[in-house]
Image 1 (spheres, rainbow, N blue to C red):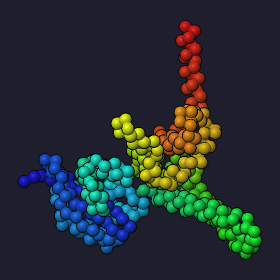
Image 2: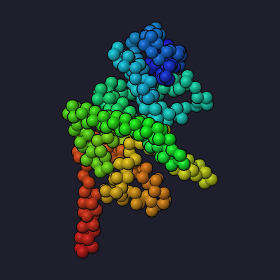
Image 3: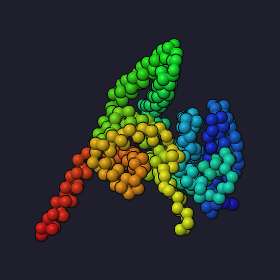
Image 4: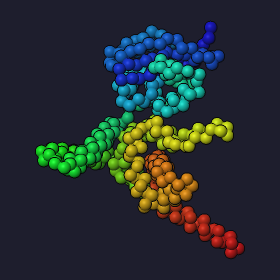
Length: 352
């Protein structure tokens, strides 16, 4: 009889459902998909799911629940399991997607996704998930609310412009637009005040934000957006994971000599992170020699300015992660000093 080495419940999380696969890894390194079931994504469904699993598991082997970080839909179940001392792993979606492409899966359904997640959990040594600090959760909520209000404000300004440029504008409509604009601006200011007050109450987060804001182009709003969207880099292990999570990783299609697609960013990631990096990248290009050099080099190579801006966005995001990890403020003059030292060495070698 084969011995069980690992057992995992892979869960494909949707808004209303938890599509679950219970699988085992045996001592001959084969995988057995034992059974599958669907439960409601609410507390009563959580209880039924855990009861179902407990009737199947080998109590002598550690059990792990594995799920994707799917927006906010996975959070309630992850908290439920953690509070009951189950081993839980929450994995970035791009890691599951990359793993799925290595499997022989022709039809993509919720069930095959749950199978793939279970297999991923069996084949990888995963870290256990721990609830993020409340401050990161609140920062994410506030920055997303602000982003939505800013989008509404832009849309309303466009509407107001259209109203004013009509041959016979409606004064009452313009008046209502102006009132709504004033309300939106007031709420945006309130959110910014709330963010500043929140950061000031948490000394550790305050220090991290100060370090991140030492990078050219990065302000407190960008810093807290990155921290909020990554839960303080809870699931991020390296820069490549971070850029992939943000959808700023490069995809390219090459096959032989006949097929050569243009490289582009995947955009299969967190759009809030991508949006947060746009204006800081433009500022960094104008005011920092390091990022300006990257921009100029890329534009001279392919002539596409926006493509170069996106590359700077990626570099900035990676720099934020580096600063966070090292705990050292950004040195704007490092690039200039490094170039001067190289030039000095070259001159000395030429003179000698």
